[in-house]
Image 1: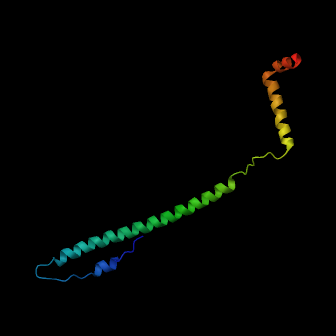
Image 2: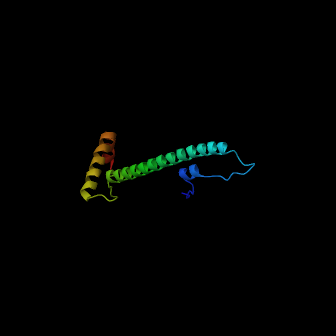
Image 3: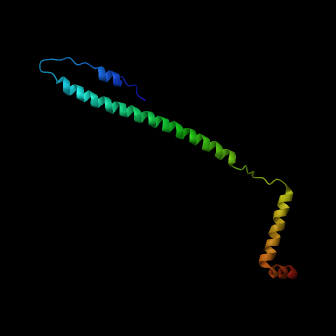
Length: 110
């Protein structure tokens, strides 16, 4: 963020030189009061936005940690050959159930 050289106190305490045909001190003071109100409002909104940003960043970190913990760790390799045998056995039973006698007929013809 850019460094700001003015604070609300600086704006409030600013003194202008007066000349014969200068600005009206009352009008300048009224304008500076309005600038101070806007400046304070801006600082308040900025503080709230920073707090909200920090809260959301911590929430993102928390949810990311939870997601990484809850993800199951799948391996690409089967654990054992017994698992492969079980899968083949189930597949064979499923084929018999679905195709029924058609499989038996083709086995007899061979």
